[in-house]
Structures are given as C-alpha cells and as structure tokens.
Length: 296
Image 1 (cartoon, rainbow, N blue to C red):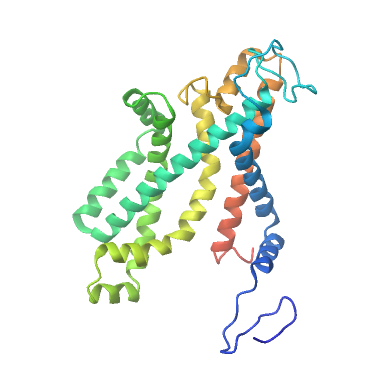
Image 2 (spheres, one colour):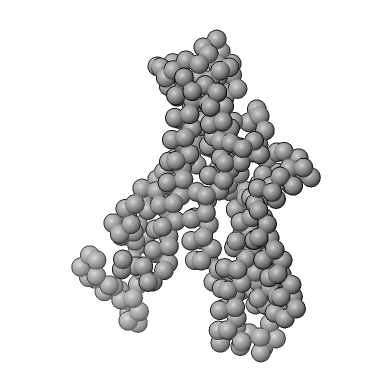
C-alpha cells in the first residue's frame, strides 16, 4: 500500500482505490453534512432518554402534594394537576412516541417490501390487483381507518401501531415496486433467472439489497412524521389511552389549564425537537444517496 497526503486517494498494489478508515469517513461526513450530524445527535439523545428515562427522572406516575407547580429546583419542568413530575412525564412520552414510531415503521416497511416485490415480480393480474388495492387504500382517509381499527382491535398500543404501519406501507409500496422493476431489468438478474434461480432467491439475494438506499431515505424522512402523527392522534383522543403519558395527550390536557403555560410548552418543545432531528437526518441521508444532490 502506498502512502499519500491526507485527503488524497490511496491505491493498493493492484491500482484499486482503497476505502479510507472509518474515522476519516466519519469526519468527512461531519464536515459535509453538519446539520445531519446535529440531527443525528438529537435522535441519539431522544433514543437515550426514551431508553433510560425512568432511571434519570423517576416514576412518571408518582403523585405528590405539589399540584400545578411551575418549574423549580425540585421539579425542573413543574408538575401537572395530579402533582406528577412533568419532566418524568415528558421523558415517558418520548418513550411512547419512539416505540410507536419505530413499531409502525417496522410494520410498514415489512408489509411494503413483501407487497411491492411480489407485485413487481408476479406482474400480470397479480400486479394489477395489488395496485388497485393500493389505490383504494390511498383514497381511504387515514383517520377513518384508525377509528375502524380502534373499534375492532381496541384502543391501545397495538391498534395505533398497526394503523400507522398500514398507512406507511400503502405509501411505500409503490417505491418498493418501482425499485424492484428497475432491479429485475438488470442483466445479472436475467442471468440468475436463466440458470434456474428460484423467485425467492432472486428477490432475497438480488432485489432486496438494492432496496436499502431508497427505503432508508424514506424511513428517516417519515419517522418525524410518525411522531407528529401519533401526537395528533393523541390530541384527538385516538391515541394510546391513559395512564400511559403521550406528548399529544399532554397538550390536550394543557388546554384546560392555560394559566399554567409549562404544561403545553415542554411537551410541545420536546415534540418539535424530536421531529427536527429526524427531518435533518432524513435530508442528509437523501443528499448522501442521491447523486443529483451531492454537489448542492
């Protein structure tokens, strides 16, 4: 391996450019996408607080005699109408919002991958039938679908995550189908079909690896929207029922206590910061994987 100045391209003995070390690539991404790095830091902080929040802020359901107390040294974010520490409630709301968003995205991505790849590979009547079902679901109001699921399954974590996952899957199926059709047109896929590779092997070994960049861009961009969507559902009374804390329901409860602004400021700011972090990460991921935007 030849030596070179920092920042220059290094070639191996065969004349093939070598990948720079991971630390060099990380510093390069940090320098080229500072806003994305800032958003990634916000996402890491939100995930950390959601994971270890009870160890930091204590029990979110613990009731005290300090009712509707403003921010102080004892209660940094104040207390609510039952005397519960508002910092613990906000951090517990982060855990619920992140769990719902990640669960809904897992359901949505899994369903979109299966339906999109099967539709593109099968073609013909199967493709036509599945796409018409997708068109029908796209025309179906999302709130009505969630109301229907809440009546069938019940109001709870499962119905909200399933409903959000279905809505995300419907919007992602066409992206998966288009990427699958583009990959199936490649010569190496045609060669695999000629040598007798099964459809499962073609989709698993050749099509699925090419789904990474477009799905990663879409997932990072929509996770912030999932948090907002969960907050809107809780605000309308369609989210996870009490006693589990939710940012949207905390904002709803704050409407009847407008004389205490800390009840609406802290959950609103927390939701805004979390959505901002995911949006910044999504924009940077799109710039990294889209060659048309790398020089912008």
